[in-house]
Length: 138
Image (cartoon, rainbow, N blue to C red):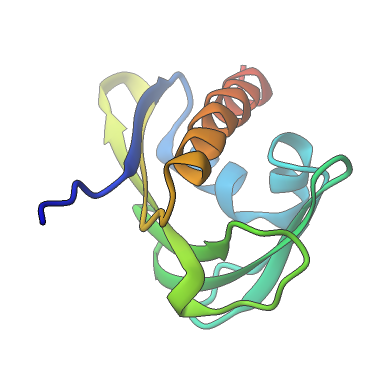
């Protein structure tokens, strides 16, 4: 039986330096301004926190890798309100690179979806959330 891994991949360029983009994805106050409504988050390997949306609930996460200001990886739960479990989590990789002229690029990849519904839900969610990031950094 052949399976295709379900992933979401997005690439966006920003007219801000890489350090500014890094702060937007790692500072809990800034995360709360564009990604959900409340971020219990620290960019420290092993940190377990939550991302909360008023209309969707809280989602447990664990920070897996931090290489400031270039790479951040966290795993998180697709179902709200459940404790973190590595076996049931998807993984989000944030790769940042500096571009000429003080600009930066974000390459985002989420993988590990167990169902097509979860993949589709998050695919639409990333379109919305990354749109908010673009607006936040404008």
